Image (tube, rainbow, N blue to C red; front, top):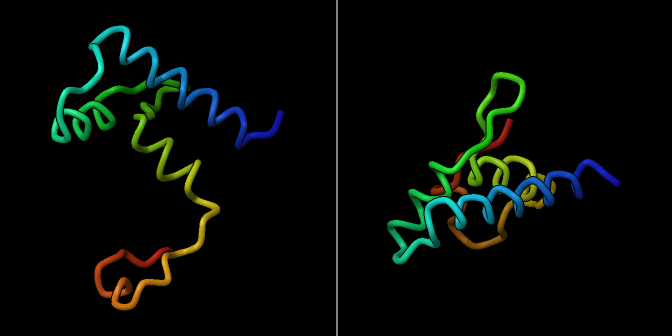
Length: 77
């Protein structure tokens, strides 16, 4: 099992765990706060659903090639 597959498994487990404890979000605003609030503590660090999605699962993706996106998206180092 690769590290990316493990991250996907943790992501999906975390989302399902959050749904079971809090119920699914009912609106877009609730969805945003749900993905930022639901987290697991691992090794003294807390990892939210949003962090797992954006920092690990989407990390290998390239930047979007939309005209003008470089003005709005942060630069990666």
